[in-house]
Length: 212
Image 1 (cartoon, rainbow, N blue to C red):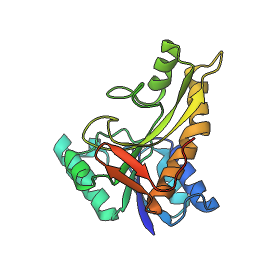
Image 2: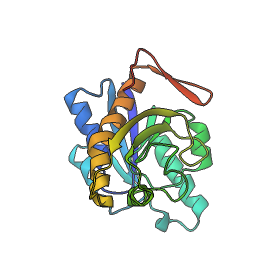
Image 3: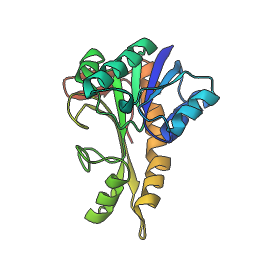
Image 4: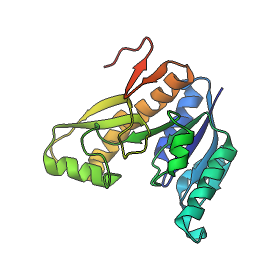
């Protein structure tokens, strides 16, 4: 059974998608063991508590320095004993030590088709604002492994979503969630739990998988 530690900062809709996928059997041989948030007001913590999943808050405001926060954040992650760390709307820049310690065992969901609209500053609603400003016809979401860069790790899965006439950033954000994020994040976890995902250099190989 793959032990998942889910890192969150806000409402936890992707966390909910993971929990629902476990309930429905779309994610097999995996369970959410701990949810950790940097934000004490994150509704994701309530989602975890409602499932009797340990919900931990490590807020930077509770520590005298960034290093002290990062040490405590990493300690909370290590204590949870994860096989896989899932960033599901996590706004924390992960400590470098954590990225090294859990190499190819941290995944992130990004609300665009990397390498478009990614990197420093591209998160949340801003991604969709920039996509609409640029006039793209197609956007989507990407699940990737986390490395020392920002949205630069090996890509696991991507799913495209059409932009429609009259879209606002909020409408587009919801469509990307419903048609991409909430589908490919659970799918990636299921593939990893089945041992079908392999990283070779900068590329990901998935056993017996047909993209599309």
